[in-house]
Length: 288
Image (cartoon, rainbow, N blue to C red; front, side, top):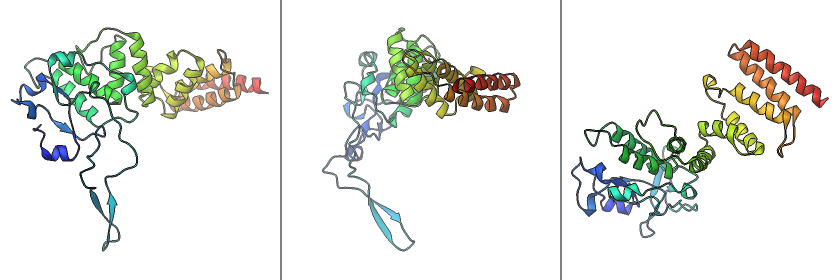
């Protein structure tokens, strides 16, 4: 940690949001030195700063120059009202809430720092006792800037499920908010969120989409029912039956069951291998 200086400002670095307890053990006081600084695409490099040039070796004797600054893509911004700059008071930290519409499509690097701050508070790195309040503050900010793991953790907390890695951190249950955050987490490719929404989304059409994305990721732990062959079987059942605006597709169901059978055989699940092959034959019979 350090005081923000002229170099930080010249490089367009965004002050990392911190709360009072983050700095209390560091002896950081005063308006100028309240926070650490992290690079972020939230801020534009000031136009008055000349473009940086990066020397890239070409053939051993010549160097070609490549522009580092001046990209055509606009950097993502998050309002200060959502993710504050610099130090905030404990009272202000208590007011921080996740705004789903402001979560960036691409996670920002500072999310990992916020997550580590949250862990440090629970390990008593800033105080003798774990500080669940400060941990929740950083956990929320990590989710706000798109950190995949934090998004799913907070979604689970709002569902009333405590995270083993963040013991004692709780929020008031809000299943509507949990669902919204789970959808954002799924859009960011979080496996747990995809598995959950594949089984709980409001419509079969939505469930099909989440199953397909979960399968494309290769599934998860079969011990928890999230193995690839298990997901393939579940989606095949949906496609075989159809309904609720989803047209039955026995041909695709048969293909999924055959793939599931191979996966089950690979794990030595011979009864499942036999079951999936039988279901595939029945689905193929519907096609014929």
